[in-house]
Length: 165
Image 1 (cartoon, one colour):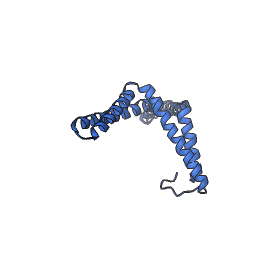
Image 2 (tube, one colour):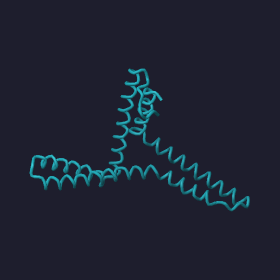
Image 3 (tube, one colour):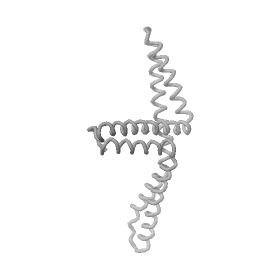
């Protein structure tokens, strides 16, 4: 795919993720409910026709349920993971700040405080942090999309990316 089209796709994806997250949640709900309904219909067909092979359809209902709950899971687990990483990084920088006697002590203390504050914010305010993470991801996609779109226009549409979508 050329860079201009890839930039356009990234731009649209970023706008949807940052400003219209309900579209993504709705797609997950629609797909999950379709899987559940299809599985229930298959179970009814299997039972009425005398076929007792309903295990795959029960698994289908479980998969459909997992798909419908995926947006809430992702909104919670991503900030939690990032918060834990930042908190552990902050602790590591704090230990380095107390163990060093040179000029890097101030830098390590500063990095420790930044990481601990950001990590704590993400850990103890998951819903707002999830929204902030989603908006930041959308903005990154938008900026990458604009860059790819502009660079694609300047280079004639194909700049020979290593990963070509």
